[in-house]
Image 1 (spheres, rainbow, N blue to C red):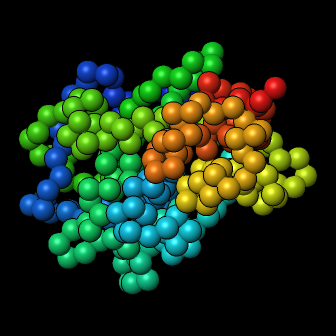
Image 2 (spheres, rainbow, N blue to C red):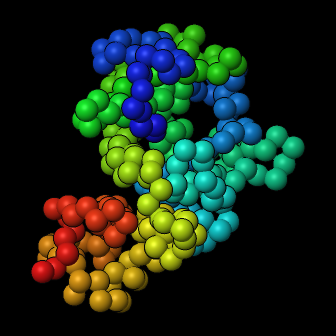
Image 3 (spheres, one colour):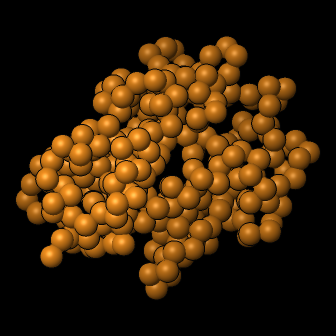
Length: 258
């Protein structure tokens, strides 16, 4: 998910209008099946990490340490999480097997949308979701007969909630187009805390429940109860905490106590 300030028509790829149709299907009978799962730069969003670590039955810590690289991308001042490829000749996705994707039900948002990509275009500060069709040269799925619009492809891939969570995260990430860290950078204490709030929900839960968090911040009682077991509610609280702790932006989800 990109966030755009420039003219979206200048972005490479076929821009799709809301009701524009395209042909696309992906199944084991397609000659290129699973070719897109090799030697790729797959950036994970916070909700992706939640779904994958829960699918694998491991903690956020273990998932990040075992399956990712944390990198800074050009133009951003917040670390990104890159899925680590398997140590084999083809550098395949670590979850790819002979039978296909072993985490298919919990596959990342980018995999669900592929080869459709999304971006948030900000015009006078108002976000608008736009879509691009960007199949690789080897993709045979676009020659299949099934016709879709961006919305029907989203439904076909059970991607609606993934997309919503990614949109929410993209609006937080847009704040990091400017350096908020001062001299300490994202590796300083505040940066590490912000990364924890976004990508390490297990550790963030301990921080919230075992510190003076509720003494310093106003959190509604129903949300206090939900975050004890609901990773999505906790992630949304984490995004609100980043906005407040890093940028001083209070939201309905989190405010300073007076």
